[in-house]
Image (cartoon, rainbow, N blue to C red; front, side):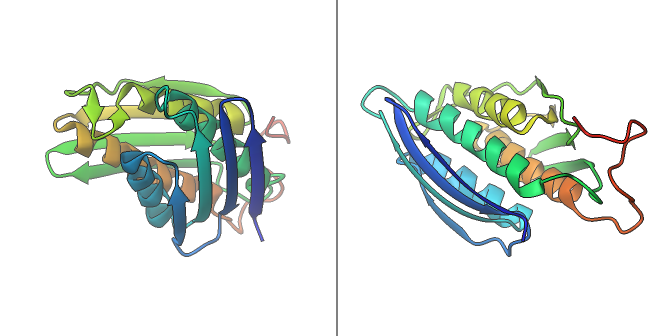
Length: 195
């Protein structure tokens, strides 16, 4: 089973996540932020992962610490669940349409963190969620998981649609990258290591 259980407790957040790469899309999400719950639920279901996530954060300040620290926890969970990376495809990509919006996401589980994002949002808030936090979340995921993560918003539009397309495209790209390919012996690298 490619699973992970991660706990992170700081003076700002208390987060517990159980994560299964080889799940069936079961989500049990409670971040304290309605729109973020929706995004993490979409990520879980469209990646066909299983994820149980409980976040207690300093929402009396704002959502920043809760969202960023959840990104750190998810990145660590991905790294732990994928393990030694033997037999995985390593690369994944997806172009996802959502109404007027079209988003590309590409992932490389290479062991080297790098994040590129050209998303722009037409609204500063989506419900109780600050759209600036999408950048912080995915940056934290990419660095904690030691992955290359790229987003290209091919066609923008409604802020809700852009955000949701990003989370879903990431889910589909990650699912592809972590898929076992029986043709891959060891790790997919001329160096013989993914680190």
